Amino acid sequence: MTVLSLSLKLILLIAVGYAAAKLRALPKGFGQVLTKIVLNVSLPALIISTFRIEFHPEQLLNCGILLIAAIGVIILSSVAGQIMCLWAGRCGPGRVARFGMIITNFTFFGMPVIETLYGSLGLFYYTVFTIPFRIVYYAAAAPLLSGKLGSGSTKSNIREFFSMPVIAVLVGIVIYVFGIELPGILDNTVTSLAATATPLALMVCGSLLADADLKSIFAKPVVFIAAAVRLLVLPAAALALGKLAGLSPILLQCVVIYCAMPVASLLPTFVVRYQPDLDSETLAGALVFVTTILCVLTIPLWALVLGEAA
Image (cartoon, rainbow, N blue to C red):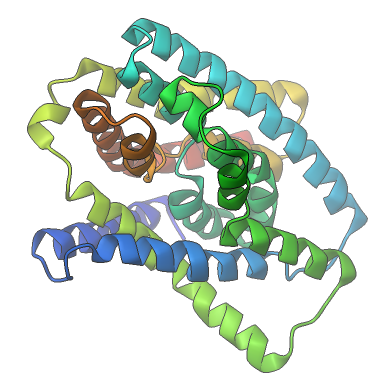
């Protein structure tokens, strides 16, 4: 698929979700239901399908390299996020901006984009690369957003961590390592469910954007500064460091595209739960809206850059 057609596909799928929400073509609250369907059904099927490839020992080495690279990206983005937090005054909105620098929309947006750009092997490596981010996403959301290190019970954090996508990763690893072949009917079912992940996930993004308050968004300079760091500065830094570390093209693509993703679409939901104040909630919605719209332009740009760098 060309970069232009990828851009058009992203725009149209997001637009469908946005229009459906704005025109009230779906029942109120259906966006939240659709989110659960994607998280608990479509994406787990897509994750499992990524591991249905032939086992090669060198791929395990690449997986180890990617896990180390993921830790490096977490450190890099945490530094950028802490700078954003200090600049915003260590308040609720500052903590929201910090979380937005660390965690991207690596599931709803990242997996469909990687699959479109780099196929099944790219998606396999990307799934492995995002494992540490899932740990941070589910285990560290409470302390990062509330500012309280002890936020969230251990039982609650464990329950949230072992979500369906994480379980799907564990199942996929077993299938991959032991070369398990699924029965024909089950294989076809998983493939069919996986095919729904891309359109549904991007429609979810669009439906969430429909609730954004445009007037308040464009009145906050921090939104555009954070968007520039999220979509341009961090991917550029990851590309430079990845090239310096000698990452192979396919591994470099996974790292840079992760960094080029928009802010996590479920950030507003987390903010309502852990940092419930109007300024924080408005900023969370604004960051999701602006970075998701702009990344339709910046992702093809990074795809071109990575193509030249390969």
